[in-house]
Length: 360
Image 1 (tube, rainbow, N blue to C red):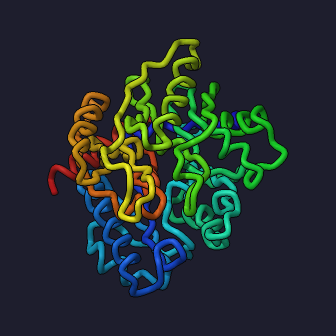
Image 2: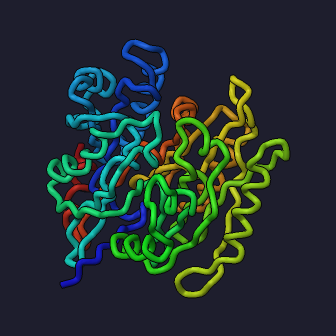
């Protein structure tokens, strides 16, 4: 019996998108705070944008069900699961397909991004179990401490990783790269890994993940890699992103071919309102059905990034959504979304759903 599973690329057909509704916590702030209100408004903007093209299910803590319904109206399905945080890419299932083509969910061990002191995770660690029941899919447990933002696949056997996440002593002490790759390949259906040594600078500060790859590199349908590039020499990521490019220039894919690299210049803004260097990025976007939801920053480079992504995703419309009130909490649009693919071979069901949507 083949127990390996396969993660379709993000641009493959979706059944739905999963998100979470920000609860009160150390990151977002207490109930009634301006910071929590800003987070909820930002998450809701993304949910509404995606709901225009595919179903969205939003997980809310039981205490926040009414607030979620008030914020989202009828655009999304609201379900209740206990939450510590709202980064669905990381706390939720990674949806995959089995050898038979059925959808299942890989439930990684979640320990608060390496057991960081600001990240209580007792409830988040159980989200995967609850999600599997709600989605009606098989749950596949994994012994690996991991998060969905820590890898990116292309559906052609390749996966992008960072050493500071996967070999983090706070996550997987005692596991070497070979052991980590073996588990990832078995669960994601990949066979070749490209390892970056680290992530963006701010990802190592408070509320950081210690180097998630989805902040600086991702595949496209053509097999090329979109790569974050910081052009301001004053920003520490100026040197970091050039090191990342060198890694990718020296790498090959599962077939032994070099990667086509598409540089995506960072926003022109380099510091936030507190004077700290930002990790604003256009790489952390989400690919829904026929739509790329792209982080916007009211920045001079927003439209340039949209044009680059329009070429990278020729079958998709690009929609810029203000993400400043997401990035200030430590992540982007990709971090707060998780795609559930359709079963393999579901073309008939897809056609029926498209007809229903046209009729509506």
